[in-house]
Image (tube, rainbow, N blue to C red):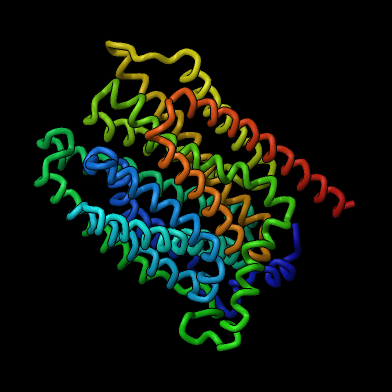
Length: 435
């Protein structure tokens, strides 16, 4: 690994004196995301069932992730200009507005809210990746710990907490909508989204208690000449990562990580859970998915220490998801009785393990490999994830489950193969530098 001096020179956001209690900031960040995304995650799962007129819910999500994709391209320089803490606080406003628009779900409220949330989501997620990696690097340096281990631990804590939003949010939905008719009770949904707004507000307040982790680019004091060179800077942040062979090799897995998330939200709930358990069973299955995701994220983060451990963990997650995809394509059929009720939960649990693996390990490897431009690396993550999610939401009404399964199988095989080539390339480069 690199020396401490070179690490300090290559971390663009870690300048000046940073707060000493880095672990505390990770706790605050994790709880803030918990309160924001337990509301948004559950709302997203309900969009296709509570906003069914003219496919308003599904179309809004497609618009949201298309907007997310486009704004992710410019998110890196924006986070650099705002600073990661301000980017995080600003990002929560988009989620708040989207939940508020669901109190009056019509085209002229949902579409603008979805467009703005795409911008806010790009900002908050690039800010999150940058902030968490900065905290991990600083904690490792101050406490004289192995940097890869700290990055893995911090990502494990964050993504474990984040995955639990699926459990808590869906259980809240289940309780508040249990007296409605399959989630269509106007009173029930109004109460639900009002509770979600309160949770969003609490998460936003928590964001304000984060310590600032960057001195440069605090938003209001950006020199005029930085705006004059903004076009050149933007091109640099967008294009330069694509000139890196390592990024080109990991992009397929970034895209697949978005595909496998959208598969759960758009295809699994519609074609597997609903026929077997009914709409009321969606919350329970997604809660099982979230619990599995949270537990796996925590454990995967704890065992992350180097590229070798990341390769082993990703291989396990990819294998499990491939088994599920092949089973659904070749063997699965709707079954009555106990097995018919167990299968959706079993699939949800296994898929949650895979999602926990991809969330923790992709964030960890980006933090380890792309030290010179952390924001740009995490922007690429969100560009490719959100683009693939948008594609699934737009195609979902027009594609069969079997066709989607074939696409997923091919995508997983190709992306995992490229990832293995990446690990061999990096290990070879590391061995050459040591000799």
